[in-house]
Amino acid sequence: MTSNATSSPLSQAHLLPVFARADVAFERGEGAWLIGTDGERYLDFTSGVAVNALGHAHPHMVAALQEQATKLWHMSNLFKSPDGERLAARLCEQSFADFVFFANSGAEAMECAIKVTRHYHFSKGHPERTRIITFEGAFHGRTLGTLAATGAAKYLEGYGTPLDGFDQLPLGDIEAVKKAIGPNTAGILIEPLQGEGGVRAPSNAFFGALRELCDKNGILLIFDEVQTGMGRTGELFAYQRIGVTPDVMSLAKALGGGFPIGACLVTAEAAEGMAPGSHGSTFGGNPLAVAAANSVLDIMLKPGFFDHVKKMSLLLKQKLAGVVDGHPDVLSEVRGEGLLIGLKAVVPAGDLVAALRDAKLLTVGAGDNVVRFLPPLIVSESEIEQAVQRLEQACVALGSSAKTSAKTQGAA
Ligand SMILES: *Cc1c(COP(=O)(O)O)cnc(C)c1O
Image (cartoon, helix red, strand yellow):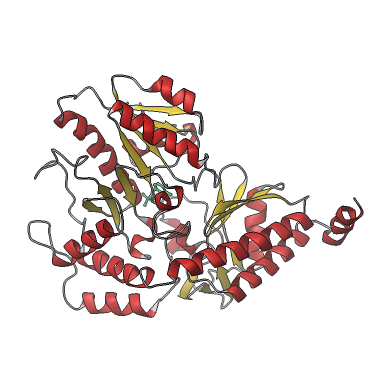
């Protein structure tokens, strides 16, 4: 019953073993569904870790990419990019930003955010302002710079002295932030909702207080929306839901709907001093990536798109809360916003992910013993119901006696 029966063991043996891959492979997808090489249909609540926001093989995206593939695959940044200009203009029109830099991944978008933040102070005559305040549980990427910003010992170990310039503080501790801001501070970097860290967020008031501190101290507020951006939390950008506007924002995961593209969005003021030569990328703004991202926006900007996300979010959260109530020996809490939902597990989160996979529901583990439910934003009511049934099944398989615990609760 090995699911990768069609691929020889040799084809696997040469991938650098940095991922603990589950023993299953997929050959195609349709909306919220993935079809395994074993012929089984899986309900995909990973969305490629918040990437395939419009599901798999969305006809509009397929057509856009096919059309672009017949025209231009790559064009260097030596020349103008009308489609890139259009994508940047649309992103700015929908956000606080005045300028966009295109990259190829989340980490690269974050690298740009960090560089812009340092360069802003450099161009204002304060080259000493290089330090950025970050928060525990953060995830900003795997390059040496973003890894230092992430600050997790388990990822940093073995890679030498981390890049200097990040001061990590407890999430939500505004007094610690006030104390940490000094003459060398350049900005504050935070995810509106931590994804990898376990679907955790401080209060909206904390974000508001960060904004005030940034304004008071002349430093920049940077939001890492690589995971929360592009509709994941129920608005196009999570900052819009929180009601606090950053100066710099990184995007990636869902921006291309599955085609690699990242972006760093900045205000005109934050971008001051960025000039030809200040930053660059060979592939950034690649025509295929730009076509994919424009096609994602075509769908997301249609009236009612985010109403659907919010409606599905409410339904999923309510149903998950019901399962949590019925299985207190397996699950303890539902958290998150939009369709970035975390289930805190009592059993090891990895066991729950495996049991869900056995029930043909794909989910993603996160920090803090949380399992992430990241359905595509186009998920239907019936697919949510099927996912919840599969969760119920997995809870039973994990040794929970649903009826007993429900009775116990009812009797209490
Ligand atoms: C995934 C992620 C990144 C890194 O993106 P890559 O494309 O893997 O480099 C950075 N920040 C956040 C919040 C993420 O979720």
